[in-house]
Image (cartoon, rainbow, N blue to C red; front, side):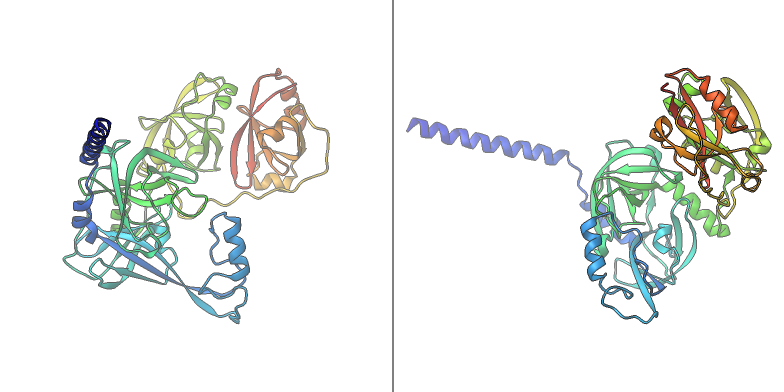
Length: 475
């Protein structure tokens, strides 16, 4: 009897303890209910219609890399989309529809969203939280930052409060509201995982990384802090399945507001431009250049007649300061240059062959269209491989002309250390460490003179891109 009584008391104490712990945990967790009630009406659902020409091409080129999913659609087609297995469309046009999110930034109907949400849209329909629908006009879109500004004809709309993303702290709670998979006004929450995150091919945005659940349809929606202020636009996710995996990326709202102001005023974006190709300075590359650390942005290529060439910048230079701003990594440079007013003369500090130099460069205006792609080259007959496994050939006069008269050596075959480093047949070798290539004979002599165990930096052109590839000499 005594044992039973003790057991009962122990159980009751355990329940009380568990309850108190749960209460304490709940007391420390944020309450998002007020945020949802007060700010949900600022978020809109965006439906985009595009007239497409039916054909044999896969209608969703960015389909997740899921073999089972791809096999299913290959065999049975995508519901509602013409031009697929078992469907006869006769080459007719059809309407493609997609969904996204946005949020109101002014009471008279200006709305921010992602550029990729409204890109090439024939019709944009905005649905408010009160179920009203409006056709929207695209004021402008900037693909480089993935920000778009649209406008609906309405008044007295609830507008979002803009916050300061620089005050965000890693670990801070944030929330997203949007329309994942078309489910309107859905709220998800998480924390800030990192700030100032650079992503491949996204040079102008210091992304906010969170673990907030973001899915297709959330694009363009707001990221809130706990004060109900918008601190970002939900833009991208990292996913192997197409769904949320806890890696979401948002455009800082200050970047988006700057873009929207320019779009509203002039309909276009003006950015500073140097005319260089850059890459991250790795420890191995820094060693090959004789540097003590790997801080800075490595110049892998300089465009002919561009601001950088006119200002004296060379491939192999490492930019450590731009207009007084310290450049720690390659991702710092595009943002610093892009934020500079075209025409301004700025001081650029570089490390060249181990020495520090300061150049005064006039910043140009970034062209609207991408630079013309440099042509690819064709393999040539095999010859003798050099010390690092490269079989090289001289370029023809016509090929040199396409490189603006520069010397280059065509990779006919890549084996050994060169192949392991990623150099492949058809690449063009433009330089070794800080020196331009002169001839196959000269290049091979330079390679042969380098002691085993040392790392060399080989400047490679592949298609339209140039980059330094570090290769360790092994014999």
